[in-house]
Length: 369
Length: 267
Image 1 (cartoon, each protein chain N blue to C red):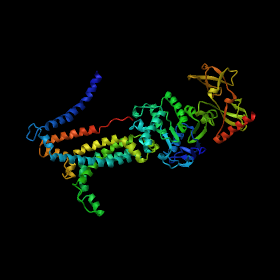
Image 2 (cartoon, rainbow over the protein chains, first blue to last red):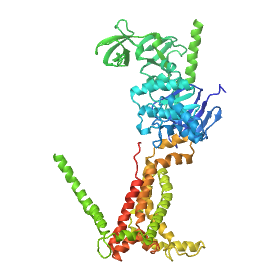
Image 3 (tube, chains in turn purple, green):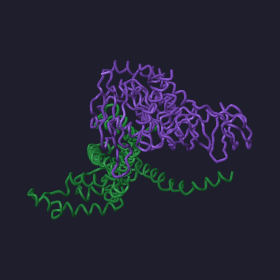
Image 4 (tube, one colour):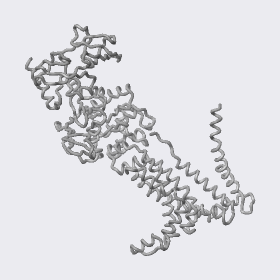
């Protein structure tokens, strides 16, 4: 039981009429009790996955399993999942108590049981004493909590959250990120969270699925995905990146912007064309003599924690630098980075091949020690 | 200052209209209701109104109006619901509304032809072997034609409130375990009750005072308060009594409006 994934997609495709598929041959597994995030730009298919799990829509092809049982045709009202909707979808004609009690009343529970459960759920989301409020009297953040209480009160095995924080202002959103994460830990149930906000995904998740154009581009922990993006899309979508074309001369040696650099990647073909990612925070401002790159500062923005410098090298490549140091616009500076800061991406590599290559590195590391 | 003046000027035509054609007639009707048939100031009309003849008429008026409203609602709600599900809903709505642009009298005459002894309805009954029936000048034909006439007025407000319903709410109900029927009972109907209310107002109040149909379609077998007003003004020339019944109808309408008044709910 413990080893059976709670949700499993097996080669699922969703297509409307003759349009290109919204989801294209997607397979993945969701483990019990973890916080998952489906991350991607709008139209990538993330909400479709959620609707397939909730049962609001049916897969065109492929199989969906819940607790090892196929649920493709099980209607939404018979599934043990509950959804927190983007616009909360609270019933405007019912007060807070009745909104939360809605699912329990349908299960025909006794009034004292309902009262106890609703109270507990409202306590859980810090809305004690709000039972008799009307929905229109609640603020955005409070409505959000009611929606969460309405989902958790049914004790589902999985909670689906469809961009639930997108309507809140920045401060409240950050607060709710902490609360949601904390809530998931306390409840110990599976959360599947949909967002297009990469910072939100990195901050909250145990596991992230990055989606684009109906395909899962990469899945892994936030640090895996941030540190080792599989391709240009992921590197670009997760965080800021400097991406340039390069050439893998041999193991541990890569060439880009006309120079050769020491790196930590190996196992690629000799002279294989690759793409290089260097994160802006891995670039250090230094003197021209000490720098590995020589660039000209084009513009500078103060971002609070750091300055964001946009620089160009002689070949016209843009280099974004995050630094606490300042540099005057128009001056030439040197940029320094460690070999570990260079991330090499093969062109058109699948996630499977990518994982294999990463494992090979780990083996080498262990052998070295 | 000038702004305020121009704003008052804009209101003048409407105010004139209200005073001349709404307030003045109501006051006149109220005034006339206190004169008996001999032109003397008295409460005779009000006393006469509470005699069995008129009480029976009130009950029958209310009963028919209720029947017409109920049947119209039963037909209109599912129709409005289906309309919101169609792809060209505005077009379908237009088609359903179109008959209400045709003059009421013309529609009544059309039904005279359809329901008449040699009309289409009877030919059909003959063809399926039931045989010719007296359809015209019955309660059935009266209610049927009234319902037909009122349906668009009922569909419109219900359609609008169904159309404004956030579809995610239905997903939410479904997600929380509600079947289709429970979703309707607990979510859809309560949220469209305002549309139902205004639809019922628009149907019930005119249905109370129908008079042309009672004569043309029901052959004076159904006598409503509307018929009584018409007869008092045009036949017996007892303007006082006619006014009194009008006053009663107006009070009823205000009461119905207040009782079914819509409270505004937050979105």
